[in-house]
Image (cartoon, rainbow, N blue to C red; front, side, top):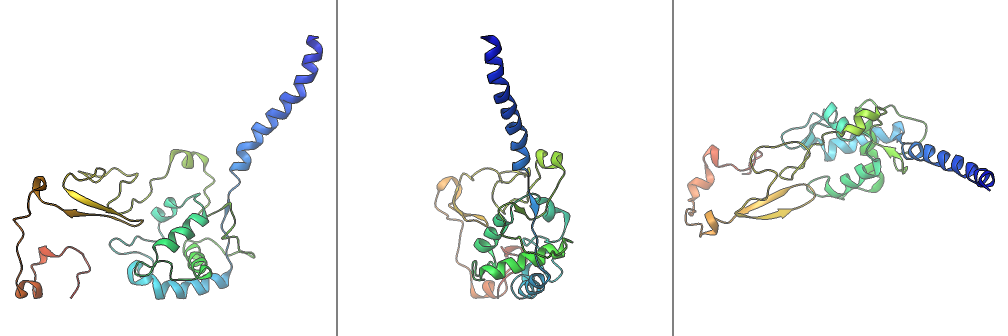
Length: 219
């Protein structure tokens, strides 16, 4: 009886062992997103028209617009899906009109960004493949340890930040979006904002440098 049970269980155990061994391998079959040269050429033109004002013509970035061709950008999107990247572009870019480009145009911009980060063009386009990633990183240990991602301004991120960046302020109304988190001041201890006053036309025309709240300013 014991011998019969052993004969029945051994094949089952072998099959189970094969499944367990192949499971992680299948899950890890990521591939570098591929694009065609013509896509990158079209994407470069679209980038200059829609993105260069903030990220600059050479992709080096300025102020809150990050560099799109450095190690930080590549690490941030290492082994992350191209579909996730495209979805982020559709929802947030360009800032003044998110989602205003066509699906093929967003793919072209993505192809240009891959090209600018030294990912060579291929014979076929795989930007929309389910297992396509923005930047393939075969270093399993690096992936397992987790890559520090650039946090969205005002939102708690994966990088330690000083003071109350990771906590909701005690005296403010918080407005959250996909790209930022803003706060409206409600006064000290929720009291009336008696310290605020009207400003003169002269102050509006020539405000003190320290009074500007945004780096771009506005006339």
